[in-house]
Length: 252
Length: 252
DNA sequence: CGGGAGCTTGATGGACCTCAATCCCTGTGG
DNA sequence: CCACAGGGATTGAGGTCCATCAAGCTCCCG
Image (cartoon, rainbow over all chains, first blue to last red; front, side, top):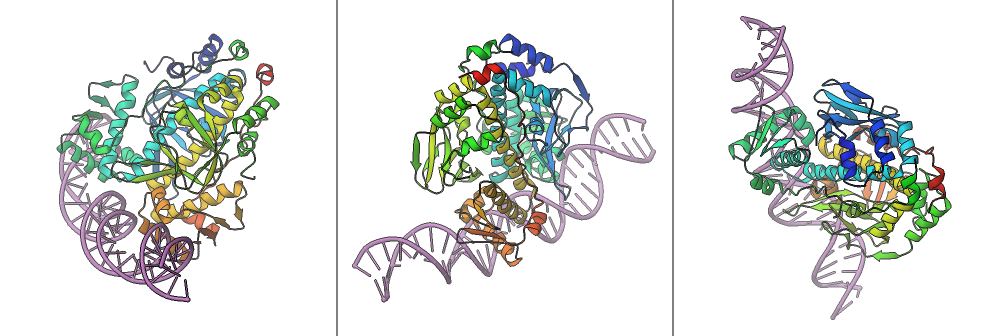
């Protein structure tokens, strides 16, 4: 999957066969491309939400800040993912999004989204599927932080990233590029930077994985999976056989 | 909201005005009432998913088990919540559901759900909203475990439960009934039972909250909120103004 | 050459876990 | 009525995991 071309359509296409009007609508939805520089916020927590985005290229993260200065990173969206959908659905965004590299997003106004739900309800169902997958990953993240040791957490994180990037063709053999620094990994895993460093070193000396110069190499995936009690988050096609009523197929 | 009567309709009704056919469909969806005894599993992790449930009454929890015997509780559904939706959407369930008290559920076959998406796509959108709210709570849970101290976590948990139960009328003043034991709270917050006990004691001696005999009393909500850096998960009406095309209003 | 961002390492302390009792309450059977 | 068992709550002692503090290090860039 090339990140620049129709990531969203491709993801949704795995779920529902799109009608021509739907495809056109999605195309039109993604015309206003917007560049966000590394370090800038895309959506701010609490922002009154009349807008969401689709990540088209680059790395981003969603996170929440605590009053004491702590930060918890929730997830790392990949190209094709929706950003800030809840800032439309739930009035205000409950967390922030930040660009980790220079990124390209497309903007979705609330009105457009409403139009989509109204005229192309099947796209709404497709988005339900997308968010369900995200939620499944969130659950894994929760389990990691709640019940895994720091070492297992770190291994799990590297493995999950590997699988997600492999799905979109961003790995090469057992390697992938990862622009995250140890602060960000710490805020993801609920660890201090320093401890992340030690865990990475331990993975390195055990010849399980290496993280150097923004490059991750997994030397022994089986051993890593055993260490992290890792199971693949299965992105199976799911409901390919959703039926469509005539009305909505014609509609729009 | 009485737990026995149309919890789901009520929740969805806050989001979309339901048409008569939609209302009837939801009614029919919830006819096969099923009793599950305390301690029994409702959905098992990995179960090939051709069925989901709606919780009608009682307490349940969703959780994941780790190979080392550890358990992470994900959430506590309240009446009207969907259980195991992802076991339909994503082929297999990624976690288990268990009844904490005797509960009543209604069964939804995958085929019925597909029919719903096909014939009543607006209901699909409504469910997207429901799951978005769940996800927002999941995020709060993640932040709690990742970045809050054990004491703050415990306080946060008691507060969140309070707000959720208040929404469905299950509180009385600053009190509510909570059938959870300290093991379950520990597995929710990523703490040991013993430490949960100490944290509860500390809340008690600080005159912030008491948890005794399945009864929770919040003595000083403001102080608790400050301690936990708590913000209400805002279940605002959201998109009350979704427009409907004629086709789908008539449809079904 | 200097400065800064990020990585690495050591030392110390604290938060939380584990192990091990004891206690309380409730239900059960004699 | 009492003995007993079992689930849950409570408390103490000791150890471990991980955070915090404090330096140095490396690399890149001006």
